[in-house]
Every structure is written in structure tokens, then in C-alpha cells.
Length: 155
Image 1 (cartoon, rainbow, N blue to C red):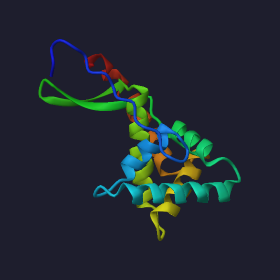
Image 2: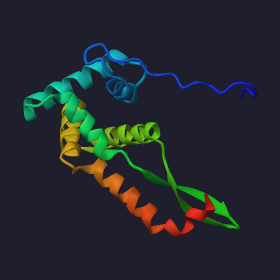
Image 3: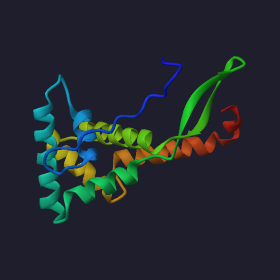
Image 4: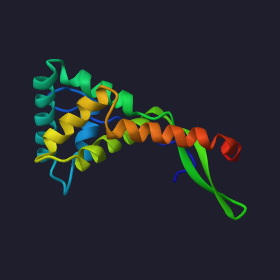
């Protein structure tokens, strides 16, 4: 860690078709074993499916889904005086977006179905409608932060 300069955050590159950084972030989280072309194929198939199901712009559905799943606060375990407290902490938008993407992909992987592209498209559509497993996870996190609000001074 350098003592002189602060490190600038690198902006992610946009994807080739939608020219969107959010899509690229999602592709990088789908990625397994370095197979990026497969991850792109999965996401573009899911976006195509979203377009056919909803008759709307799939990019706007994706943005809406991520906006609905992005948390404002999270809880972090802090050990103070021999006991562990769940301390609520506000999180930045970039970290919230990363959590939302992780939750969306986790929920879509848990879904029953044959291929990941279909499962991802259904999860994104559900999240845009404000229901689904990822939205439930966000609400659960917010409830937990609200319940542990008394420990906020341990921050």
C-alpha cells in the first residue's frame, strides 16, 4: 500500500453489444473458469429471453432489477468485549451494486430449471417486479440492520 498516492478506481469497460458497464459487471460475475465468451452467451440469451417475455427493453429491465435488489445498509460482525455484535453499516453504491449482482446470480443458480440463461432471465424479471429470492434477501438484510440499530454506535 503506497503512502504517497491514493489509488484511483478503474472504470470497467462496457460490453460490445449494449455498450453498458453494468452488463459487463454481470458478465464478470457469471464467469467461471475464465470462459468469458460463454458468460457473454449466457447473458445475451437471458437478455433476449427478457425482451421476448416482457416486450420491453431488456437493458431497462436489468437496471430496474438491480436497482430493486441494491441494499442501502448491511450488517457487519464486530467483536467487542468478548461478544459479537451485528453492527449496521451504510454501504456505497458500487458495493451495493456488487452485492445486488451477487445476490441475483445466486438466486438464479438456486432456481429450478434446465439452463442458466432461462433461470437468470426469470430472476431478473421477478426482481424488476419487486419479488423473487434476491429481493427477499435485500429485505432480510434491511430487517436485520433495523433490528440491530441499537449497536450502530459500535461503528
